[in-house]
Length: 319
Image (cartoon, rainbow, N blue to C red; front, side, top):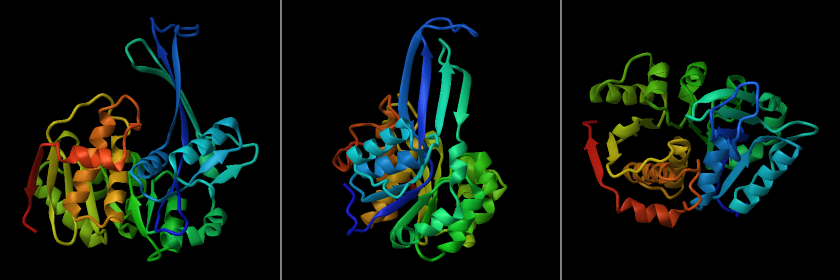
């Protein structure tokens, strides 16, 4: 449970209710198709907050919800897991952001509806009302959904907290690349990093050049996801690539979110950067080893036990 008297990480961003319809027979457009419907809680920042709480990090999450049943369910779920959403923006007569998708018998999406208009209700006045929470956080984790609000937060609270960014997508990374210098930590994937930097990362030399470039921009710690090739990392002292060999894949959705949460855990425990990367990679691997976006079995002890069982491949670069 959240303890207001202890150091905490703040996550600020969207919560989404995901509804998926899976066809159990041939999909029939304009007609009813037999199948099953599944609802779950999502959103990059919400996933990060839940993963942080599951591994024991004191976590506050500020989001935007409607006062509907879906919003109430998300709030109740946060209390059960142990992260604090009490300072979220609750929209009177508003709807909680919802994503609806229909998948055919092959698992391919044939139609979807994204009801995300509530996310746009986040404004500077609300952010100002949460100033003390932002300033008192050890780290503030953000996404790139709204470039204008993101810029306001970064410039208003410059040097008041340490900002961590998950760009979420290449398109969104392109929209906020002028703000990268405000961040203490960034965690793009290879393609997002290429969009921000403007050059390809097809070699170890180019990866190290990317790390140096981000460092010159003012970023302290860089983590670039290379998918099956591991994680490139750099800070003021070290850079390299770390990869875990023995990985089982059932569902890759949510792996990046759990990795970012692993970074937060490492920061709060003041781990060296290599240990932080290994903890974060292990969280991601535990996530993709389960059908759910968040593995319900994940906790700090489980992650620690899995780290020692992983086969690690490490390469350190000349700094």
